[in-house]
Image 1 (tube, rainbow, N blue to C red):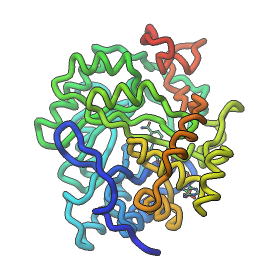
Image 2: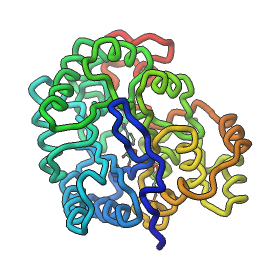
Image 3: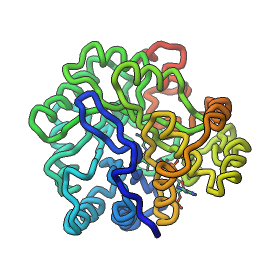
Amino acid sequence: MRSVDPALVPQRRLRTGARMPAIGLGTFGSDHVSAREVAEAVKGAAAAGYRHFDCASVYGNEKEVGAALKDIFKSGLRREEIWVTSKLWNDRHGEEDVIPSCRQSLADLQLDYLDMYLVHWPFPNFHPPACDVTFRGSGAEAYIHEHFMQTWRKMEELVDRGLVRHIGTSNMTIPKLKLVLRDAHIKPAVNEMELHPHFQQPELFDFVRANGIEPVGYSPIGSPGRPERDRTPEDTSPIEDPVIRKIADRMGMHPAAVCIKWAVQRGQTPIPFSTNPHHFAGNLRAVVEHPLTEDDMKAIARIDRNCRLIKGQVFLWKEGQSWDDLWDVNGEIAPP
Ligand SMILES: NC(=O)c1ccc[n+]([C@@H]2O[C@H](COP(=O)([O-])OP(=O)(O)OC[C@H]3O[C@@H](n4cnc5c(N)ncnc54)[C@H](OP(=O)(O)O)[C@@H]3O)[C@@H](O)[C@H]2O)c1
């Protein structure tokens, strides 16, 4: 398998001036891909030319990914050549929990610092791994800005202490980000959000870019491997869209590769997950070879279906709510 020269991979310039590779490897194996397989993929992806890895404590595999990173450094890559993101989980938002949680990720990943640390979701809660979407944890909370800022101050302290280089948000909305931008001493460098051709989030995408926040796009292929419990009958699949398939046929590639090309050309940083060496290598090659035409980009812009796949139902905080309440669809933050 041909590897890609990392120097050819586009980079995003963050508000600090740092450069982040414009594609990363996702590492969420959910409940069907083992930590060992994900760690193997991290090593394989580094050999294929990936220099950006999207991790999180809740993925339950940071120890194994850390061992893989250690091997990668042993093979000659320097720490500063690799971009590593990790995330603070929802049950660690407490002021006393943020720094220990980050230190745990650093210990597991065998790193001295993280390039990026994100607040994974803006809602504090606890739920057991692989629980059903109808599960509601006791202590689950709405977005309460004062609480979020207490967490954020600790995130800022992580930067001041040199434990992380950048901090960012994930699963945020415009109303919430407006408040954070108003009150943060260190503004978020990225916002990680669901982005694929059937969920383009144009308003949020434009808002974050206009405010110096780089959009990182998760589930860029439409998360075809997500568990059954996370699917609803309304869900659509970008890789089955006739427009994507037609472009893929013309270019002689998998529709997934078209989704990745579109993402990077549009200006977001996709973080596709794969443990299949042909898939992850092909996804990386897609961003350095044979760009989509302007007509392709326009055609894909027209197939947005506003179809959110990762709805976050388990993070709701009271009975009788709909998952829309997490996403401020009426332009206002849902009351507690
Ligand atoms: N911040 C958040 O709240 C959040 C939420 C969700 C996800 N994420 C991050 O985003 C990452 C990616 O999201 P995701 O895993 O939901 O979905 P995704 O990347 O859209 O889809 C991954 C699936 O696509 C398949 N695939 C990948 N490349 C392919 C190719 N070239 N051809 C055919 N199939 C291909 C993979 O299977 P194979 O292994 O067989 O290739 C896997 O089943 C996660 O791993 C995680 O790091 C973050």
